[in-house]
Each structure stands twice: as structure tokens, then as C-alpha cells.
Image (tube, rainbow, N blue to C red; front, side, top):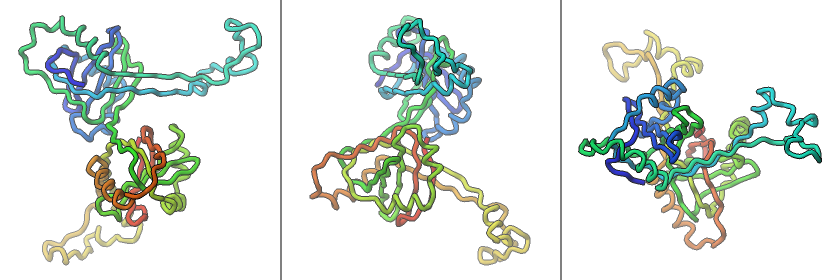
Length: 344
């Protein structure tokens, strides 16, 4: 959705731009915390504590902004029973519950407690917000507007009277419908393998079938289990929704190499004359940086490869693979794991 040169509540610092979009009831607002660096969501999320959120919200000022934001509809279910019991609210879940205010007979108690949150942002909401703000800023129309383009992942905070009610994150997804990919599944996970241009490499997603089951999957995520799934991959018709991903990780190797007995290179006795004769060299630190990126270009390359193989394949209903919740991933070469991580 786009809105050009309109007055909105806005603030920025060196790391984020913050845009506040009021609802029809202006005591509520949808606040977007957009990283200035496209792949910096993890760092922003790490530093976005309650104090930082309140500080940025207190600095919001009516500003001319040109806005591009995605349409959104997010639904989340929260299981409240354990949280309520932890707060000491236990009786309603037992046979001693007194719920006679609801019904006298039969005797009632609460078996489960759920909370469902639905957040939707569309043109109707934006139009309402525009009508509210425009009367305030009618004399500032000639200023150069700030540019706010939410075309990469961001944090959002739903507030009432600038007090946070709900915090979440929005991630950009890619879609491919009815295409052929290497795939397998069992009762716990779906596994999708996406080939790189060099098809000896693959990005393998291990997606829990239960949305909040990553911890259990990770606990059982051993080498033997990974190899079993990879050996069962078979070309299958799949409709895919996955997030764009860029993950950068630094590994400090010095301790690992020393533990393996490679110690001399880190001392004054090191012989690195094969690199340079003088001055004498030794290694002070050893680091390895891994960058894993999945975007449309990578997906397109994999699609072209697979379609040549499967041009005459069946017309069956495709499997649905929607990676809209945390998952494990494994980068492989010739189906041998090189790197294991998780996306949350």
C-alpha cells in the first residue's frame, strides 16, 4: 500500500525508522519499527526492550512521510492455561471451580484457556488514519517528505495510549505454486530441499508440523535423524511459502583449533614462511564467517532445474509447505551437512 507526502507520527535514529498509524479509535496505534539496514532485524530485535520502545514512542512527531507498507493480516493463538496457573489462578481448572454465574447446572470448570489475536492493516485502516492526521498538518505540505519503504522485515508494536499491548515481527515471504521440489514428511516435520545453482549444494528446511514445536524438533535434531530425512527426499509437487532469509554468522576458531592440537601457529614458534619470509608471522586469531541467503533469484534457479526433470509428471494436488513459523535448516553439499541453524 502507498501513501505519498502525508502527515504521520514519525521518528528515526541511526538504526530504525518508526512510523505510527492510528486506528479509527486514535488511542490505538500500529507502530512499525523498520531497520535502516535491510538485513538488520536480529540486531534491532535484540536491542528493542521496553525502555527503548517507550523512548522512541515518546519522540514521535507529526511529519510529512511518503509511505510504502505491505498489507498484513496476522492471527496468533496463545495458550493461557499454564500462564494463569503460574499466576496462582488454579481453581477454575479444577473440580472445585465455581462458575455458577455462567450456569448452575451441570457443574462447570475450565479445561483450556486460549487467547486469539488478529491484527490487520489494509487500505481502509490507512484511509482512516489519513483523515485523522491531515487536519493537523495542513500548513506543512511543502516540506520534503521522509521516505518510509517497508519492503524488508520489521518489528511492530500495537499500542493503546502509547502503552504496548502486542509486539511482533513482519517478514517478507516468497511464493511458488505447484512446482516440483525434493520433499519428504513424517508425523512431526515437513522437509523441503532447495537446490543452489551448483546443485551439489542445497538449503534444506525442516518445518515442524505443530507451529510451536521447534524446541522438541531441535532436541531430536541429530546427525542420524538428519541423514534419514535427506535420504528419503523425493521429487514432489509442492506449493511453497517461505521467508526471504539472509543469515550472517561469525565463528571464532582459535579455541577449537587449539583443542584439536593445532597450537604452534598461534605461538612465536609458528613457521608461516610459506606466506612471507620476513617479518616472522604467527596467527593471533582465527575466524570463519558464514553467509546464507535465500531469495527469489535462488528459488528461480532451482525451479528451472527441476522443471526440466519433471515436465511429464503427474497432475496430483500439490503438497502445501508454508514456513510461517520457526524452523531448522541444514546447508548440505552432496547431502552432507555443512551448516545447521534455525530461523525464528
